[in-house]
Amino acid sequence: MNRAFSRKKDKTWMHTPEALSKHYIPYNAKFLGSTEVEQPKGTEVVRDAVRKLKFARHIKKSEGQKIPKVELQISIYGVKILEPKTKEVQHNCQLHRISFCADDKTDKRIFTFICKDSESNKHLCYVFDSEKCAEEITLTIGQAFDLAYRKFLESGGKDVETRKQIAGLQKRIQDLETENMELKNKVQDLESQLRTTQVSASPAGTGTPKSPSTDIFDMVPFSPVSHVTSTPARNGTQPPPVPSRATEIKRDLFGAEPFDPFTCGAGDFPPDIESKLEEMQRQRWRGSKWD
Image (cartoon, rainbow, N blue to C red; front, side, top):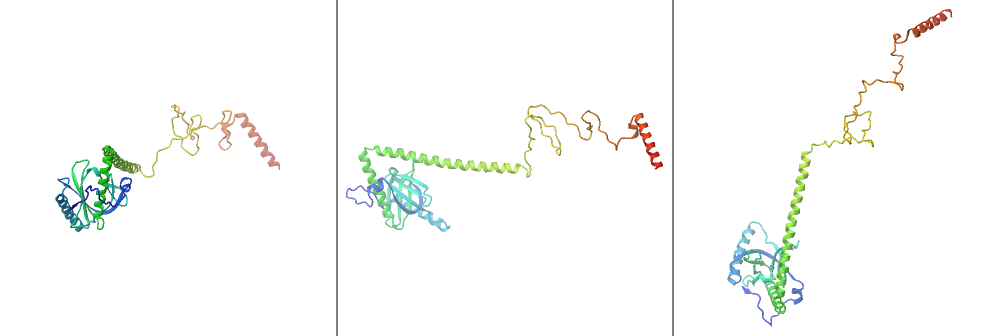
């Protein structure tokens, strides 16, 4: 193993200071994983971590699992590990928390760095596999350290504190975004369960009965084909009962029963009218006889 960054004044770096201070340098690599180490630095420390993660990766590879690919974004603020397609940040290792960085001279594809976790305060060793850029990535991290240290000297330490505050706020924002996404998913699940419960509780083809509409006098309009039920008016009063059509007595405008010649019998007329009718019938009979 070889320690990557040393602050030699005659060191020739690969990138311009502006590229690392105002932007970042991206690299693609395979992420073997991270493991806890007891010491913040040391060649033997990272060698044991690499051996451990390589063995775990061989086991997963035999089970058919592939080594995940990641994108590294290196700047004077730290090293970000992202998912290449979605650009989701998986790990954000701030530069002032990285204590050691090295590439493996026996296996030139492997490079590592040790970073102190911001939550657990444990030292974690991150191990990567890059077929062509392992040494270049290590040197880029070393250049980021050199630029950050110079900036620290120029600002008298104030810039480091500002970066710490910004990093803390960025982590807080990331946590809130994750929590917000989880809450949105829970709300969607509850809405889906509520709709399913409503559909299963309501029988098919049934609906809420609608009350009949009323006119401006709060009266239910008359319908000759519908059965009129006793429905309370809007003002709370009960409408008068409607008489049955079978028992209803039909009368004319003056209250008299209408004349029906098919239902009236002889006994329904007064005596004087009956005698006149009989006399008219006899005269008609005599006239027809003489003819």
